[in-house]
Length: 270
Image (cartoon, helix red, strand yellow):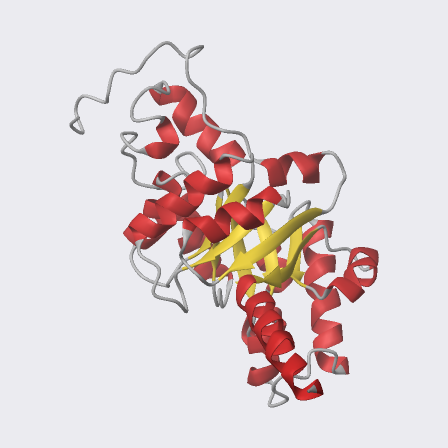
């Protein structure tokens, strides 16, 4: 493949990009459900995907997961028709497009600070005319050139999405303007980092955090964007009630730690 001669793909009817399960749920008026993975093992991804969430959250911001491991986790999730979202490090455009080309359904971009930042993210993750994403087409997402070139560009913009994390006070001050940006698909409120920035670390239900959580949801839904955040299972109804339609409700490391602690604590009864 060269810039002057795009790949020649199979007929458009033969191969299609996998549609997003999360976007299908949102479009049908349902709440999309997500589970988070910190471990890179595809077996854990398969165990979690078998529970039938709409998406798995894979992380490359805070953990040592490699691109090869991400690819295998994405494959494991697709066995169960489960989406994958990769939280990327803030780096070059390659850090954004490589998970998408591995057929992640979406990205979570941390610490989007203002409108200009949101536009930069949009430009690196959306194909023209929405953005300026670099195109290859020879990877997992385009079925290794089997998806037609025009279908690939169009479907990638429609069935892949990016969550802009709002987790800083300066981002909150521009959240309505960020939500208005064409090509911003989702606002993802991050209460943990937001509480740290306010000097109230870990107080996720402090009145100032509660107000910020509501403001993000209001800005997203007013502009027809997805409103996402993290949520304990006991607060699902509450968060849906204030407008959130995409919730991450648990993590593998939490489950493993609680399970291990519970088993060892049983010996205290001897």
